[in-house]
Amino acid sequence: MRTGLLAFALTFLPHLAFAQSAVEQCLAARQSLTDAAPLSRTSALLRASGPLRIVAIGSSSTRGLWQSDPARTYPGMLKSELERLRPGLQVSIINSGRNADTIPGNVARFERDVFAHKPDLVIWQIGTNDVTWLQSSDSLTAKIVEGIRQLKAAGADVVLMDQQYAPVILASNHSKMQASIADAARQENVPLFSRFDLMRRAVEGGLSMSALTSMDGLHSSADGYACTGRALARAIVATMPASQTQTAPTKRQRSR
Image (cartoon, rainbow, N blue to C red; front, side):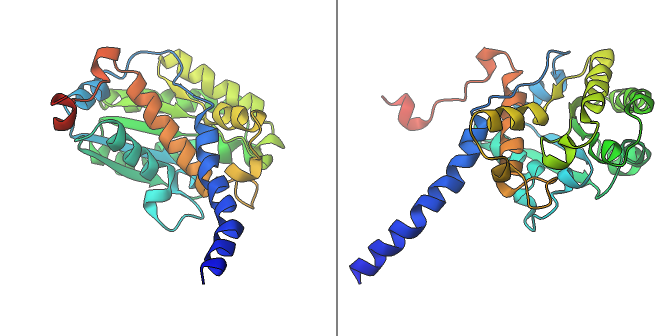
């Protein structure tokens, strides 16, 4: 019996270790938010332990295509990582991703799918379907800027998220779309979280692209969603002043 269990462990544990290590290898890329105006409302609520309300709007990679458990999408992983990093934090996340949506489609949904929830922070994931469907990135820059202005006018902090580093994206005119997103972020002085750079650095560091990307060559794998959500949570917490990122000591720590 013991021999059988040992054989089982030797067969399957290496694969489990690899699956667990893929996220950590990806997180080692240490993607941060670009320099921009601070997330003042978000930081204040993190400091006060909430309640913090986040809306994630975008397309299918926000919705979490191929993931049946909402907790395994990037917004779900963002929530769990924020709660891990800030014990006691009250945080809710509304996933307003829609399959096959575009930048103009996102903006058209703001009133119902963003503003109705009165968010403190909006994560706006953009660009994937627009460039995949061969729309001109040049014509979309003004739409991104206008969308950011609408979100800011509603009183929310805003973080942009760009395309994923995946085979379908790399085969498209992705560089112009990336430049357009970055330009809009600079114009409106909002931070950009580049999952493209996060995934690229992880792959360049030796992680297989297939570890982060699903079989369709576009959407994230479970590890890809986990890395994106957890890395984003860390980047958001890192925008707080260093003195505010320390959690209160536990009873056991205080007694030492």
